Image (tube, rainbow, N blue to C red; front, side, top):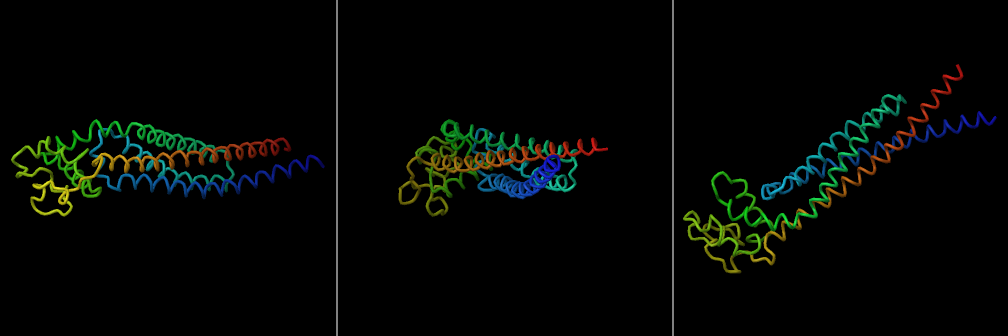
Length: 260
């Protein structure tokens, strides 16, 4: 009687784990979609700004999330098939992919967090130099476009303030046409509006563009880190459920073999 009760208990555990894994796969797909969406959003939303950064860590974190999110779609389908068929080989492969994706997303989350800590220093060291030395220079069209968009989107002028432009290669050249700031500093852009730097004409924001860009990137990095680490923890829970399911199937196979 006790043996029969034990068998019923193991069957009940197997069924419960099976349905829990189905539920996990649904959450897994939702989490994967979130990871993929955040990765794409990071690269698409004002992606021009990436050319203003000295480090590629920000973009790499986003690409890692896109890779992880794509793997989730394939792995989630594999997980459903493995649970339905109750094959230990398929479940072991599923378990391996869960751990792999867990590590990938953990790396993306940690990279985002580490870069978040040094973002302010990097911008202070490189943004002003990038803007003043590369704006409107031949072969630097991407940076020029990024600076113009940065100043218009965030309604700012110069890295720290509008006076930064006085030391720029562009303003000190004949190409500037006697401008004191680029036209993108103007509240209303008109031809040659950058010749007048009065507060009524150009943006004069305390802290300059560096403060605005830092806040924008910091917000994105926090989302990348939170999503990466959060979904990684979800996958770790799924890996533990899968390991338990594999163990129960192994015990059942052993008992069936012993009965023969």
